[in-house]
Image (cartoon, rainbow, N blue to C red; front, side, top):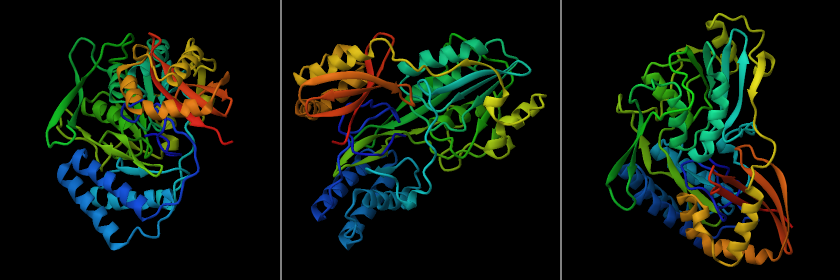
Length: 439
């Protein structure tokens, strides 16, 4: 799931749990009209998009009752309103994906926020060769497949000759279904057609559903048949759980660590106004073998140990005597690390996008289909944002972001932004975002 630091006002990827970006503006206090407008959009989304129509109706009725009773009257900040709405929704649905997001840090109801994610290259943190010719790889998320596939292929290739593999999903919070199924494909029999997962999607504004199948893909590197240990934790969620569940059902791995978070309902983010947005699950996973999923129960480990000890225990099960559970200590050779330099073509793409948005004429052929659709939907706001910023002064590479996006400091005559962008291997923009810097 994505950051909730502010409302969605810029280009973003619409893939499930993909990259999004936000423009920073101070949240305005909420009045009765603003709260009523937010509730109206929320209940519409619940009734017309939520993956379980009956439950969506109950959740919508709950919010309407609360609003009418004055339960939300004292909630004047977007953050307090969002947290209360999220709690009310969870009371009805018990769905950990369904949440209202707002600017600023999460309130006390959300608990202690997790540590920032480690730096990755399109979700891949590192790959290593360990003592005993054991391969190790950590994946924390799944951006769109066009971004994930090149990174995971580069990371897996040096592990091909390993005697065993350890896949670390302890910090994996999910992402695109195409990405998580592609990761699972590395461990499936390449000579067979293997059904990994299905997602049952609700057609908006109806009670009809369609099923999207995710069979194992052909990967450049096959790790099928090697002993596989998968590390999981209570933080493993959504798409990370999908990988674990599918491999567990297929009996392709041994799982070490803690029971996972229990979120199996993918969806997307919708703006609600007043700098609020809601993540609405409009789909649910349905494994082709069990015809069920891990929603609410998580994926249970074969070997239950604290997450911090999982790597050490997995190595012990593989006949090693590790000195610790720290991969930095145990690594003999790191064979993959996130890049630190800009992807070729991203600066030119940022400059081109700014010029096109300023003239209200985006080149949709230079975007993925999803990105093109999002840009069409948001074009009026994007045109105004770029026009208000004025003349472009400079574009300077800042860093590779934690999800593998190139981040640029972009200075205009009337302000500055951080512009993030991801290109596919054809040079098309598949994800981008704008974060306004405070004046």
